[in-house]
Length: 118
Image (cartoon, rainbow, N blue to C red; front, side):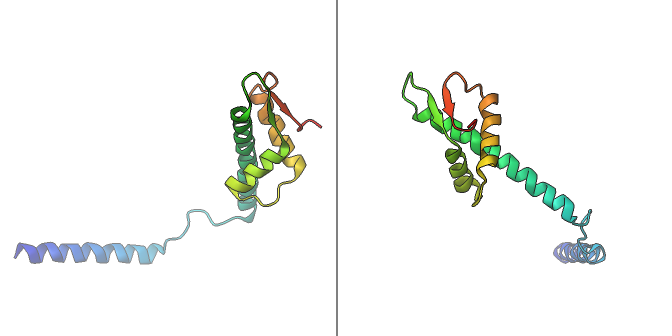
């Protein structure tokens, strides 16, 4: 008898949840905005380019022999952006700007060389 009551309660709870879902219909809290979506894409791309520059600097430092400066190029940044983030087209100036920003933030003037300032 207790199994029948438990099963009945389980089915009733399920029906209540289905009814609530039907009434609510899973509506989004905020409707999709084209401007917000485009701004998010731009932010993500910028963030990904900065991360690509960080990874390119780290890889150049690993490749450098002891006592030699690490050489990191704009091409390295575009290669990382393509491989890790799927950005098929990255403008040279875009990648150079990201590399310059991360180059200065990582204090690379002491142990790195780059073509981002050309």
